[in-house]
Length: 404
Ligand code: PMP
Image 1 (cartoon, rainbow, N blue to C red):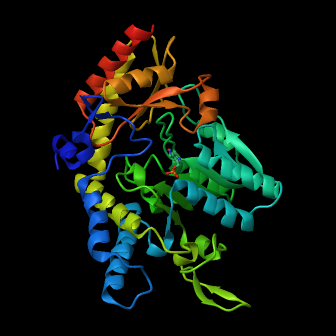
Image 2 (image 1 turned 90 degrees about the vertical axis):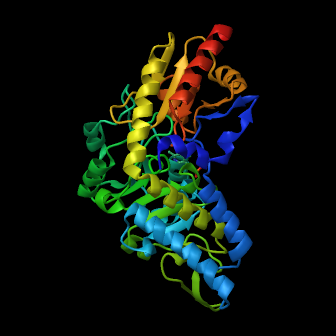
Image 3 (image 1 turned 180 degrees about the horizontal axis):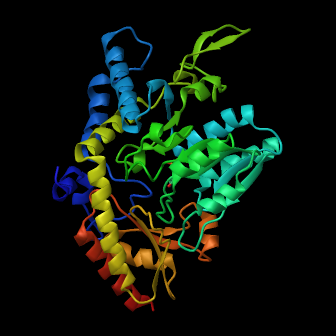
């Protein structure tokens, strides 16, 4: 598939916003969905809808096959060694909370340290604060430099035998920085700590190989990688998942139940209580097919070119400052403009059909670090092109003329 043809796969991009063709630059919040994904969900409800893992009739068997087929696609996508390591959850947020409340409660005690960074999304801060208040653990924060990067030596100096878990974002949603997670994992393992990677922003933009990274847990959401909302994945090494207690209790996660005792189901079902988001899983499988058809390397290369082009053009605008200039960066550009509130700017840009986000991006500590209340964020997807960048630039210039 050529990148010039990819837009045709997204029905929403044919619509107009405020009388203008839509320029969607908010894929960091959620991506648009290609026909392949929409049709897979539609097909499931039209032709395969039944509950999974239970029915002995053909329809239920077909629903189970499609849903479990999607799990195998996720396994392949992450290069995990077994589908036992692929737990379906609601999204990244639930995946991190699951680890905190199962692995965390089982393995951490007062005084133990969980290392996070200054660039974490709230979903990788608050679950650890909840656990801190429950168990008396300590949260240690790795600082970021003016470019929005983590220095490996700063990181290493904060690791000790007290560190039991490093929980770090693979690619920052607020800055675009891609962290050296493989090196960070190796260093964490040297002190005996486990590693959880928040891959919410990474999976849409690059190939992820959990065996090569050697991380213990990897979390992501389908909706940022062209799949539906309400479904995501927690990858965990089999031995760790095996030793962890269940997260929620209910149907599907059990093998047998009496009033005295419950035996839990095998992996990954032990962590999947209740009727799952079947259509969501199938939609995620279709999103993986969509990305693999384009090629993960091709996506990374194309988006990097577009990122460079957008960065160069934005830098030429007087008074505009890019927040986060990491040497290793994905398709997210956060910026502020002197004398203009980000919300006013984004509201005016909406009139031009340009969808960007103006907020703290659920990463308030990043805003505090750079001393800004919010930023405007343009985040890229496979459907963006040079024309989108040119319309973004023109709209910013027009808005500056009006506001400054
Ligand atoms: N981590 C990062 C880096 C994110 O960008 C997001 C979503 N903005 C999340 C976690 C949370 O993802 P979700 O809301 O899909 O659970």
